[in-house]
Image 1 (cartoon, rainbow, N blue to C red):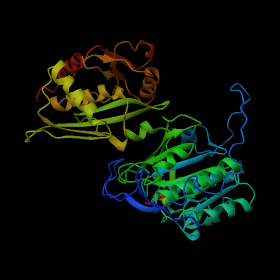
Image 2: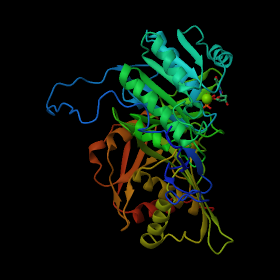
Image 3: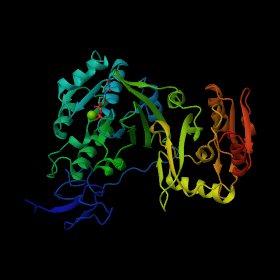
Image 4: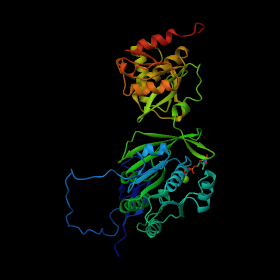
Length: 460
Ligand code: TYD
Ligand code: MG
């Protein structure tokens, strides 16, 4: 028998070392190193059928190819994120915080796919059969022809899948509960998760089934332990949202067969996840229209325009180093906007505490949000509410100029659709002129700042 080898594996980044340490040298995480037996793991399994040294066939790049076959769930928000349905023979990782609704979403997807005539198998390693049935009954989808199993051993799962007719869609909930006989590490360790995911991915490729692996995410946003799994699968989708809001966002992070910048928006209700086909209306629902410090940003999420409220509060600071608290936006970007306001527009704002919140828990990464943020900040500082029927978008440059951004017509159309009357943006957006929507173009932030400050209520 081969000598047992053990190694110390970081559970966060999967780096291996020969001795234990409190901190991983590779990723810098503390207390993530665990001793694992690695007489096993990737590449240590049974020899592949093809013997070493036998050449493979080379083919020309220009050969025949078919579009990937897809299975469509009919849940439009989900199909949008996958790029038009789950690709047959692909492995998909769906990550998210515990309790965010991953199991609910996938059970609903499974039921829909089954109703559309696909063979669907749902393997739960976390819940007993009775629990899954109960959930399905609550969701009103217990009549769907979905086969269930409650199992965590990879070999057992594969044997079960292979003995039945080839499935079209398999859900494994969750990857962290899986364990395989092939490695000796404890369940939940990186080696276990990686080897299990590899086996499931291989099953997808071999049979042409779409296999979804559910993965829990740690609080800092990493898929716990199995970050390595991300490289192995064809698509990674994150299910996000926070516990205090009912809506959830499914976001593509990696997709070999589709776009990665699309989002799907859902609302968690008593009857499961409901699609939100008009997210702007939802994000603006609770808006306090007369308040200073709030601006509506006409943003883009993938190919879809989304209107989002940006709230700011500028308050005199008792501290030597004023506070900056940012939720849903990049704090470095906020510092830049503040610096431009201060130096280029003569707006004295830097000594204040500044709070910025993207309403609804959405995260914005577009530079086009600069202008909305700047407008909200000036409004809060001067106490002048912005017009409630205006949207803002544009990128601010360090010189204080406002640059036009892409997809202006789409943003304007969305704003007009939701009853907005004017749009504040950079110069050169002429292509987006729309009936019923006034386009206000500013070449510099100073010009916009002057206009907002001039609208300050007389009493203030
Ligand atoms: P779940 O899908 O179990 O989350 P995950 O698999 O990501 O851990 O969702 C759990 C939460 O969703 C739970 O707090 C209850 C809530 N929920 C509803 O609000 N409505 C429903 O119809 C269902 C099934 C769950
Ligand atoms: Mg779950």
